[in-house]
Image 1 (tube, rainbow over the protein chains, first blue to last red):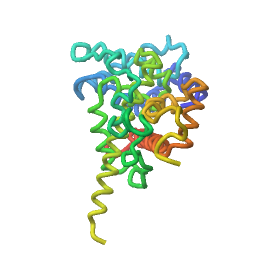
Image 2 (spheres, chains in turn red, brown):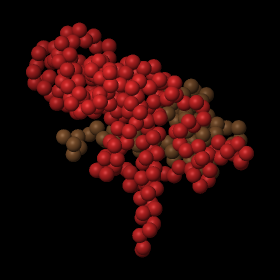
Image 3 (cartoon, each protein chain N blue to C red):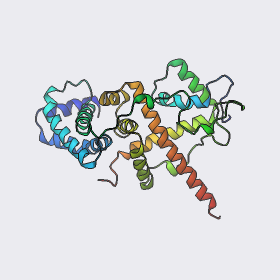
Image 4 (spheres, rainbow over the protein chains, first blue to last red):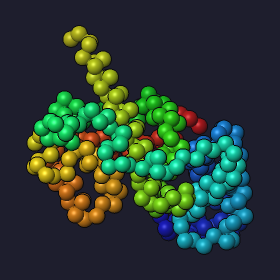
Length: 218
Length: 70
């Protein structure tokens, strides 16, 4: 949604154009529901949060000042609604526990780098360096879709929220920071950690497929 | 081109792996950005990792497209 269409959309919504509102609800609800699932403990709570969000949007439209994109604003309302609803269920993870400590810190297996006593310490070991992937992961197959969705659910809550808003919903990093009430630097740390976990999963998948493939007699 | 960094004293791979997040977001300070760019030119492992991250990001974006899940 670029700025111009945002302006046109906002004008239509403010004029009480029911078709425009229905279109937006239809277009944005799947993404909002995806985000809501990362805030709330149950599917039912997520759906209720999205419904409450749309009511709050209708309610708040006259006061929307256009300082952020409309979609970012809606996501911000959802985050607040969900936070209020799910507050007793949430485990809050201190950000310090998620920050990098300057040592790779679980981004990849530390055993893949040469140790202090070896040649080129801190460099990839020759047999453990990442390799370029082939076409097996260039398209989102049903298998990959299922695998990634499952892995997203397993991410720590904050990482999952950031990855969903940034990479699935397409918000910018400043927008994600605004919606979640985090500093941009923290968003970048959480984003990188989340992406790196999913990358590792894909790497395992690629290796497993290669191993399986090499067992097939030719 | 080797799996490791081009020159001794350069930023080691283990640190580049951490910096790739800010690299992708365009958030590195200019001097750091240059170091990382130079490292990537000489390091097959780290440039492969960057490519993998980009693939992961593309696949995540595709997750949001209307799929079999209604």
